[in-house]
Image 1 (spheres, one colour):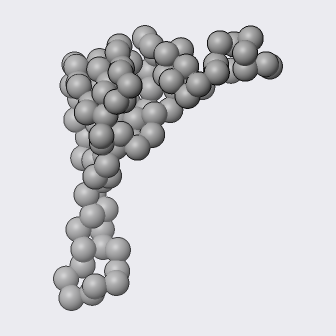
Image 2 (cartoon, rainbow, N blue to C red):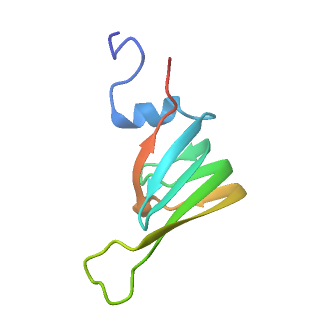
Length: 97
């Protein structure tokens, strides 16, 4: 499929086509959010609704500096969320099958 025919010419076009769709956002600090994208800007600030946030918490094992330790996963749900763009690593639009 020709990208010009689908209206995708720049990376932000993928974000624009994902408005009102569920997106996956990877953030700094081992955080991930999934929610419905309502708005964005050129700084990648995002407004999401119906959000589930996942936080990975690594507890190092005492006395062992090279080991990974245990990983705990904390989840929480929010009705609305403003994501500051400087913390965004990746935005994945919904799969289009």
